Length: 255
Image (cartoon, rainbow, N blue to C red; front, side, top):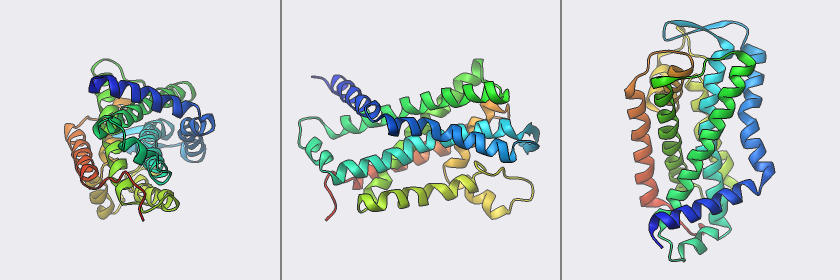
């Protein structure tokens, strides 16, 4: 069997395992919508200035929660799931099969991308129906989908990287959330960044991948200027995460 066929078979298995845990799948899809409703109910009655444009805060949070959905699906859930599979010796058994490790990793990343795309469709559709948010079209739609795919792949690669340094499953959730939740605040996902935002927060947010990802998605939904440098920064983090995962990812439980 070719590597592509093996990857396709593994992808189908990963997808079946995902949907056979309906409680987990439900909250993965419901979580961003819950946050969207909460933030728009608390903070979505005014306007916010984004890249020199005044946009309604409810529309702003549609774009923000779209980024949140992709990151949580591709980074949080994947990293925690990998540590669980490693500690339960599932990865060790998979590594002992004839399937090349790269095929398994590719199948997990492709599945994360597919889940992210479905999450984006649901979030954007909900935002359109509930808050009259704009839906990208034409060239903007193609760029928007490209950003979603690059973001999902990059954060999935970072999930493998962070899973490499998590010592055990008990530490998985604290470490994963501790590395990503501050970036949601610093990057304007939970609270919009304004003119009075401290310069060190603005500088820090541009270094890490969440801010460029959220800003690139805003271009599609809010109509702000699209910058290819945001995609380049995001892709660079993905390449770095993949390199770290290839170097340090462990298939066996840590002793």
